[in-house]
Length: 194
Image 1 (cartoon, rainbow, N blue to C red):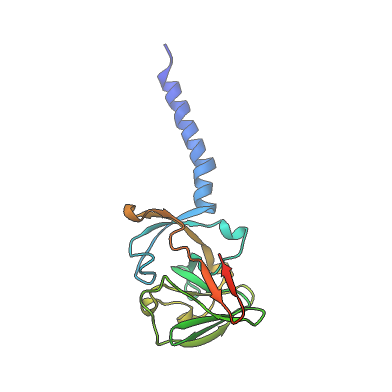
Image 2 (cartoon, one colour):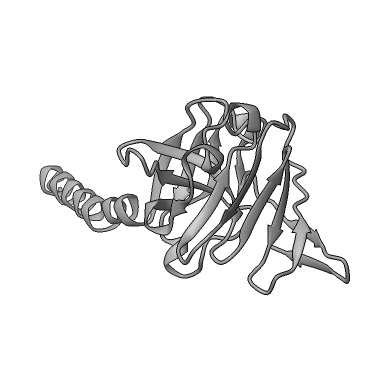
């Protein structure tokens, strides 16, 4: 007759070992849960949406325009924000009564088509040039978002990761929620960016 006490002890030890070796490092270094607090990303994300943030993705590539990211608020790093990347390093972001235009590093200027915006904010007029490692981020619910228009550029080192999965609410479960693909039109050609 097998010794069930030793088998149970062995199973518990194996489970604890797997948690320490696999689960904890993944949780600490690769993914993090995040709960949305507020309405700044409406309608893309709502208050209390439960998201999974990929912390490792930007170890291999730079943040891209349209990525929804979680980051440490530059004025108080103990607070986490969720916003969308609008402007990239080396670009100039111009906002004219709510209409966003980008001037890239080679001097081409194009309006930014933002299909995810429902509530526009025509009160902002601003022009910001981004240096190396600086990003311009905004919430999708422009009238109710504290973002780069208010507190300035986002340093690269404050970015935690990209939102890659929505778990709750169950009816909204999905991979890469809020992903945006841009069609940028210039005076001579159309450029599609992922």
